[in-house]
Image (tube, rainbow, N blue to C red; front, side, top):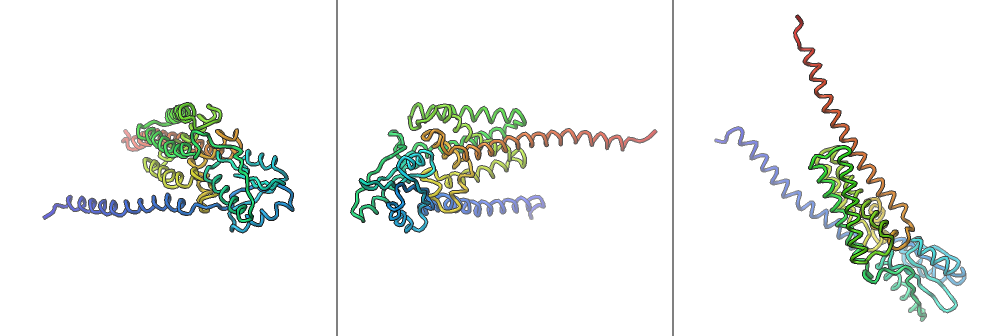
Length: 342
């Protein structure tokens, strides 16, 4: 006959078994959905594209682009110089310039090799249907050492993992308050320097200012690590899992690093830019290839993540300190009240 103490243990073991059997397939399904669904639905959606030239000459080009069911968001420019400036400022991914010698396509493979190839194929197909030949000019080319942007895309996951590891280490080692903040900032700074040394100096896949790129890597890491440690400081170790889930299952597949945010289904592309992996990839492209153009948005996103996370670390430490100091005070008051008089 089982003892009373044995029954709860078996019940607990059964619940844990059921939890594992159910939870693992659910997580697998979520991972498949998060990573496979955006990849399977990759297509241009309101992709910013410029059209330059006299209105009478560009009208036909605009009509042809408009037939592609909202694939492109058309920006009009007076001439090629204005269109080039827009590409360099990351206002558009490319531009079709109508000239007397025929159409010309301006692209920026540094912004996204995938989008540059897509634009070239789409415009060349239309030109071929009309019997015209189009010239393609890569205004901001990707580096020869990484023409497809594979190395930059591959940096998203390691930085996210480094941030999660740093935040988890600070939490599990029991660091609090200023010490925790110092550890997070110091680890992020060191990661930024090491990553810039590898990507810029050794692999030569980045072409911007070395220290600015190191700063981007550091800020991207700090945004994740501070969020992990901050939420854990407020709700306990479960915060590590919550932030890690958001970063891994949403941030990475929704980042658009391998293509562009406008190539992902809505609202996936927008959500991805609100999370550290997407904002970090966009900021790195701006700093490395476009002299900081369009860097404000992603920089602010990462800064908010880092600031809120570090603030949560300090707040959580203050709350725990207050709880510890209040406990003994209450015990003393109780002891005084229970002390017999006379």
